[in-house]
Structure formats: C-alpha cells, structure tokens
Amino acid sequence: MNASVSSVRGTRRSIVIPLALLMGVMAIVGFWRTYFGALFAGRSEAEGMIHLHAAIFMGWIAIVIAQSWFAIQGRIALHIRFGKIGMAYGVALVVFGLYFSLTKFAHKVAEVGVDGATGGFLAPFVDSLTFAILLGCAWFTRKRPEYHRRFIFLATLALIIVPIGRLFGGTASVAAGDVIPYLLIWLSPLMVAMAWDGWRHRIVHPVYVFGALLLIALRYRQVLRDTDGWMAISHWIAERLA
Image (cartoon, rainbow, N blue to C red):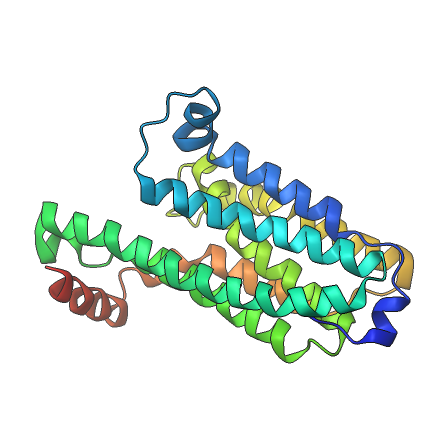
C-alpha cells in the first residue's frame, strides 16, 4: 500500500473510502445470519478462531480505509510506512485464511473420510490465490499509484465473494439466472469505480477491466471442482489431513 510521493500529493478526492465502507457493509450483511447477527446481539457461540478470522477480515478493510485517508490528506511518510505493514497484513490474511480453511477441511475429512471429502477445499484455495495475485500486483506497482490503489481495491473486492455467497446459498450453480444477480451485487462496487473513472478521466482504467474479467472467472471456480486435476489435488490434501 505504497505510492510515490509526487503522485500522492496530487490526490485530493478518492472513491476508495466510500467503496471500502460499502464492502464492509456487504461483508456484515452477508455474514449476518451465520455470525454478525448473533455477535451484535451478544449471544454468539462461535469459536475463538472464527472471531479471529472475522477480526482479520474486517481489519483488512480498516487498513484500506486508513491508507486511503492518509493519501488523501497528504500524509505521505505515514502512508508509506503503514503501507509496508499493510502488505505484511495482507500476506498474514492469506496464510491465516488458508490455515482456517484447512482446519475446517480437516474436520470434514474426519467426519466423512478421505473419499467423501475429495473435491473440497477448492473455493478457499482459489479465493486466497486470487487475493494473493492481486496483492502481489499491488506490491509491484506500489510506485505507480494509479495502478496500485486499484489493485488494492480489487484484492479487497475478491474477499467479498464469500459473504455474498452466503446471501445466494453458495456458488455451486453456474446457471445464468444465478450468476448474473450474484455478479450484479458482488461487483457493484467495481461498477461504481469504473463509472467514477469514466466520469473523471473519460476512460476506464485497464486494471479495472482486468479485474472485472478475473473476478467474473472467479465466480465460476466451482466448475473445476469435479475435474480430474482438482480431485487428485483435493484427495492428496485430504490424505495428509486424515
């Protein structure tokens, strides 16, 4: 979450903060029935790891908002220093997310056996990989703010696929009637960002075009679940968790 000094100084308006807040709301709404509703009502019985997972997830959104605020206010030195911490936090988010998902997968293997669990673990693996790719792009473009901040935004939006999936009962269906409404809600922050680009710059930034194609493809990740390749990988993982 870095940026060059000269470019950040010229930044005065940003759509990132309101969109990050919107994504935070989407996450809360998506997980309301399974987590936040009980938490806010003071009757949550979730395990400590689930609380930690939720805190890390929402913490990322808080970091994105803070970094955008530092940039807008021209607090360049703080923005750069905190950006290194933010990148490390993003890596930790991936590591913990995979660990959390592997723990859940291990529980499933214990319940249904290796063969019964084969094919699982696809969604968290692909989601984490997508976030990591976008985060890596943000790191390599940290001296090009126009690219960097858009990659950070897209990485954050990639995380929201999970809570939106809760609203739609998952992502198993690839029928157009299920996919299109899902994409319209999940990618609504991206649509706003692209419209903002079109209004301010009279062109949509290529990072957004790349991101839109990547995230649309991510929505279809379940088509890989029953392929021979993923079944073999999933079986290999399940055997080592058994």
